[in-house]
Image 1 (cartoon, rainbow, N blue to C red):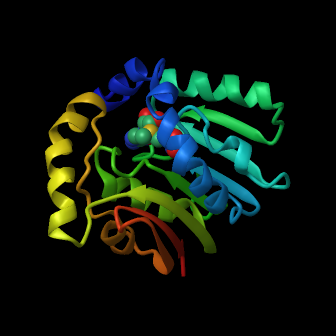
Image 2 (cartoon, rainbow, N blue to C red; image 1 turned 180 degrees about the vertical axis):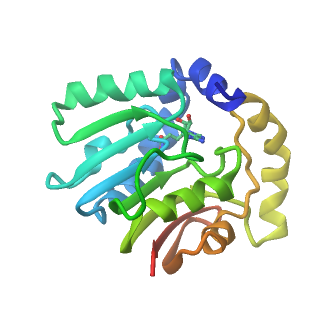
Length: 202
Ligand SMILES: C[S@@+](CC[C@H](N)C(=O)[O-])C[C@H]1O[C@@H](n2cnc3c(N)ncnc32)[C@H](O)[C@@H]1O
């Protein structure tokens, strides 16, 4: 088990309560918007406690993966409570996906590539398993283009790294492009720190 997966195992018991306020005020709205774009066979990377599960359209088939057993157990409970038969959950590392090339119509990640230990490796894997023409939906927080906005992010960074292995200052949009995705649309949801990025595999 990696250090980050262990951190999430320990965090899983209070992850949902820790984020409850921001979830109610903002994230749930962002999730609804992001997940409404999912189609067909969907891979959700870093499914966590399954917070996105209520927002998927009914006609998609979702495979959710996470490398934290603790987080996945919470997601499984949520899946059962929601009675979702079209969702399958698997313990897996995003940096080494156990799926063939060109398997999924949609790849989803929400607040994950700030945490994947080697984000380029994870993004290249996401690209590999997406079908050509398939859509990737990234709802992620990242470093801002504004030096001023980056000050609090750099201050929070060491604390978040220690707690959950999360970086507040990754250049995730650039990383997505570097992995080969063609970005179609970017919506800044909270300044340019939280962005919804819609991309395709050409
Ligand atoms: C901040 S949480 C977000 C969870 C969920 N996506 C959400 O929106 O609430 C980050 C999640 O990514 C998972 N994660 C990070 N790196 C991963 C990796 N390499 N492979 C699989 N899961 C990973 C963590 O275990 C954790 O559940």
